[in-house]
Amino acid sequence: MVVRSLHFAVGVVAAGLAILGVVLPLLPTTPFLLVAAWAFARSSPRFEAWLLDHARFGPLIADWRREGAVSASAKRLSAVVMLATLGLGAVAGLSLGLLAVQAIVFAAVSLFLWTRPDPSRGPRISEGP
Image (cartoon, rainbow, N blue to C red; front, side, top):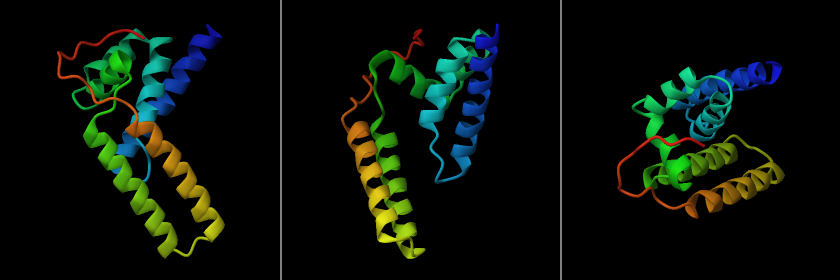
C-alpha cells in the first residue's frame, strides 16, 4: 500500500511537471511523461489509461513502450530547445565552466535521442510495460 501510494505521488508530480513543460520552454515534457506513465502503471490503472488515451501525450508514451522510439519532430524540437538554452546561458553571462557542463549534458542527451528509432507507421495501440 505504501509503495503504491509512493508510485502514485511520483506519477502525479511527474505528470504535473510534464504539463508545465508544455508551456514552459526550458522544462522537458517527454521524460516526465514517461516517468508518470511508469508510476501510474504501478499505482493507478485509471490515471495510466488517461495518459495513454490523451491525444497529445498518449502517442509519445505508446511509441516509447512499443519500440523505444522518439519521433523526429520531438528530436528536432529538443535539439532546438537545448541549443537555445545554451545560447541564452551564454548571453546571460554564465561561466564557461557551467556552459561546458551544459554542453556536455546536452550532447549526451542529444546522442541518446538521435540514436532512438523513429516510430513505425503502424497502428498506435497502447501496450503495457
